[in-house]
Image (cartoon, rainbow, N blue to C red; front, side, top):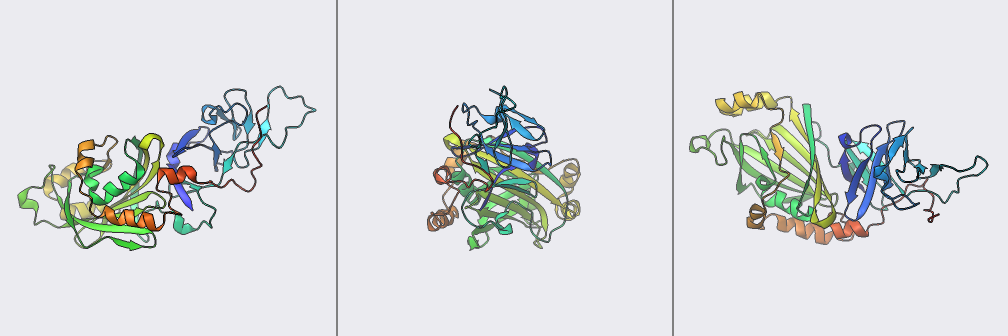
Length: 338
């Protein structure tokens, strides 16, 4: 299964990016062809983080003793002070992981199962045209499972959409289909934390939250009264150390976003929205009191889904830490210290 670990923007050419999946440290970088490579963030020589090194000619050079590694195989390709007559032992290699890049997200294979296109969950709704995107990332002091649960119980604690008040009223029950939990709730236009009483009757909005617990991913859609998409956001919630989560999100605006806003929103909102680069705000600082006060409601379905798929789920930090993330077929066995 493909697990999203970073946004494409986090890994520019010539730079390293340190990623974390629970207790598994990874380093991401691009080779000369621009292909994303993923190695264990630990030099097999002296265990120094490889993310501290430099990308040289598409390979990763350790900052400590200068050992250089190929990103796809993990094989050591250069050792300083090694005589020209000496060959680099095949056992000198870093642990490499299978990776792929799609729709602005970088994925790492996290199970010994067949990976399919359906695993790429961080993407906009199918057959929907959009004209521009925005992106961002953050680290929050909330465990991944709790973050996913809060997305169902009260997404307003985790994010906001300019001019929109999300209510506590659900439209139906949680729908579970093909490993995805989906829930709709009503929303209205507002300029404050609570909607103006005169605006309650204006063009009802709907917020749709979709959760893929096995891949720890989220998609949020803002729909108008005719269920036309005004905005969609996808997010990878990557479990980190000490009950933290790394968030990588991307927001998509539909070609009808401005028109949709103009048709539905009050006049003052239209004028202000025209100057906003992105109406979505993902909170990097989350109020602990707000989290604690959320009632456990729809997230009960999430807990049930995780229990039913416990053997395969990667949403739990403990589960991810125990996973044997597959090494690419071209990777050789890791060598011992020398």
